[in-house]
Image (cartoon, rainbow, N blue to C red; front, side):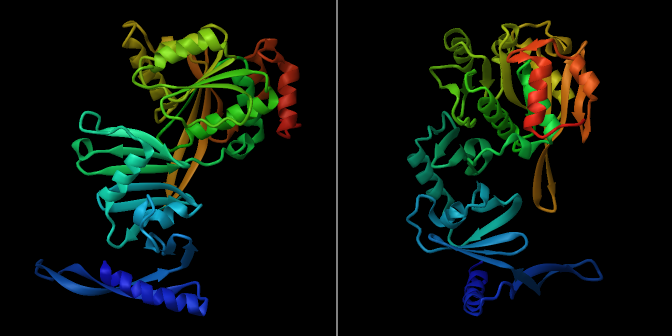
Length: 403
């Protein structure tokens, strides 16, 4: 590793002085070769790497090739230590540390991060102290925030090595940037029916981003609506509006906060940041009371979401079934994350409505429900007025004049 860095430093100076954008560097590394008689032996082979991009920031330099980033920190007294340059880079979205191995997601692409003399324990300990994370052997994992980064720490007790995941908290895209215009109009109409809506998908698929985007769109249209947000980790970002926030903790269980929010805050929309356990009953109770209820939930598709929600319900009521879920949850939005040639892509794969004890597709892989069938699912009046007039307003806002 040290030899590689020395070679790169020399080439870096050459590239910067000549204003070049790409340079080839020859790095020697051992490789295993197998001879004709099947005997493996160590041989020296020559690998050629292309370094295509150099970024300079206040805390150091970053040198990119197709699948790796080399860091050259100018100063290490930053709380992020040798990782400061990649944290400072605005395009960095995620950083993953396990032992001395580091990976990062930059503009949707995963890179291996290489930095000389990296001290992971020292960096992670600094971040734990600065962020106020509560972590020890009685609680070997913890979540915290520092600046515009959300941090998740794990001790070797449960992970086998020291680990940290850092996710940049970024601005929320508009709803029209996340879904096409007709689906944007219909999603808002579904929420304001009012409905109980679960946004499901794997970790990092954009569930919370879509939820925040939906809420911001609703706030811009109806700023008078009262919204109560209950979370265990602050993730949802709503700009303006009449919003009340509650954060769960050891002394304030999330189920208690949901019930208190419904009783004292009088919300029109109740938002649970993430559905995890027995709080499912308090969340769906909002729907029975005529409150729009939204949440995110880890599940790969709508069918598995329904089955696993039924299992959560059975923790309290043993005869809860899939039919119970379909009776109480009105809409399931499925997010997907794809990793193709190192590039991460996130999208809404499907939107399903519960109707007559089964899921029907409002949207699935680019195909929309007909306008006639969609309108049949709504009463004459919804939370914010006459459905036909309100839905027409939503379509015009998103530029849908014919469908």
